[in-house]
Length: 249
Image 1: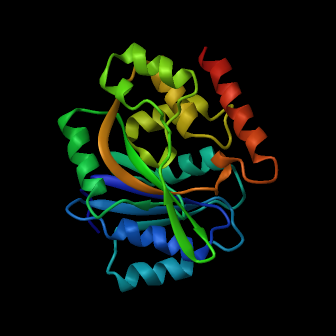
Image 2 (image 1 turned 90 degrees about the vertical axis):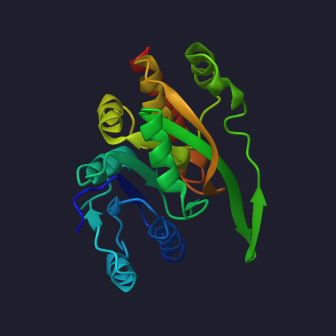
């Protein structure tokens, strides 16, 4: 196994759909010209599909991987922290089943951009897709609605974000130490929301957010707790964000 890991890609799972999980894993495996490791961190699912993943990694000759299992459901934020504890890369990218990298050079390009700009937090563009009766429908999205503001002063995009023009989670690429610190900031009062909540603290600490004007993610629309699908998830997400605003302010 290679110990000179540049990027740790952490795939976060909870009761995953096997087809979508494999689709996402393959998009990570396909990344070129970068030394990466793949960590699958499962949040207490009855079926984590780890045997299927072991076979997939073996078939593709992948050695730099780690299957991290939480014995019980601890929530998204603590699942990320658990996966991060296994990460050896300088940078971390978080992704979930159903989402995929836009092409085979996203991680390499993210890494180079972050190194050149000494960026601790970077985000890129995304395209949404969803499947309807076996047809794939692609559509644009308006999050954030004002990308130009990230090329201006810190106070401009800070105001834009804090007014609710949030970023999309899988478009982030972050320095591991910075992300670890931000996760520590939110872990006591945010269970399910990581992206918006850590960014609130990043802004409070004056950590610059860099915008990389490049498509980086195919984002599956209509699934995941961030989109408020079923079982009161929308309220849980809202509560996490409100709690973090209260703590940061």
